[in-house]
Length: 379
Image (cartoon, rainbow, N blue to C red; front, side, top):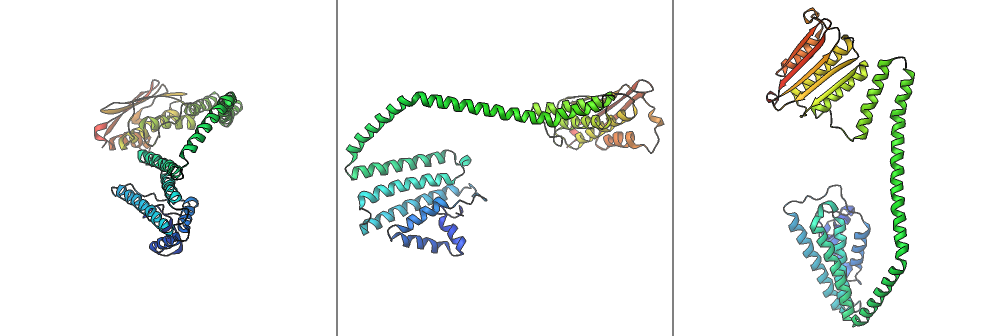
């Protein structure tokens, strides 16, 4: 793996040194020595750069020294290119300066483009595009330099004009075919997306709605069970249709809706829940949710009703929740001391978090539980 940390150009020497367990300076010296044998070191380095992957498990941080390190790598790249030019010029190999200079200019451009490909595309930003443009400009400059030194710029220009004319003619002749091909590909892609969407909808309906309908058929003699299944399926389908809902562990409204749904599913009682406003689920808000859940459970178990109403409102200064049923009612004073559903789970919990719980009930008129807590006392 090529190592991005401590690299001079592409991290090849660092990776080879770590793989062999030798100093990186020794590996660099070997590559420089091999360059004198017909440029073997450069070809070996380029081959390893092209085929050895970059280690991205721990990306180098873009700290304040990152820009200086990048500049140092650029200077090292230019110095290496200059040294190779001088070496090959002294040895008079590879066709002399007419080939060496353009080849090295174009090679520097290719090196910049490769280096841009090593970077994270999402974080390179403007600098990454500048590297690409600079690399392309160097490659083009190398080709033009070769044509100028070889005195082939004029014929190359005439050949280029001929090629451009031929390409334009081919485009005009084949334009209808390309247009039809692009239209067919667009239509095929659109149809494939629709097919995938229909398949996803069919799979979801099979796994949820159809299963619920089968359960409803089995419990057709139990209206409460049918209502419970239908309401549960309605909640699930709404959540799937309208996207991801807030996390019940983070937001008050989502936690209250989850508590109401849990009571509905467990006790086959319809809970008409209305929540106005929202806030973070801190300790006091969580206590309100737990107390409201206990009030819903008490109504579902003891009120003898098929529907319970829940209204919650989040105001800038407080949270207020009302749980109401039109059941048989009860006498709070007659509740045995060992029954902690009202005293401990509702009144005691609200008291511990700086809130209040008021129960209004009488025989035959139903029960209303009011829960309030000041938001200033939450932090």
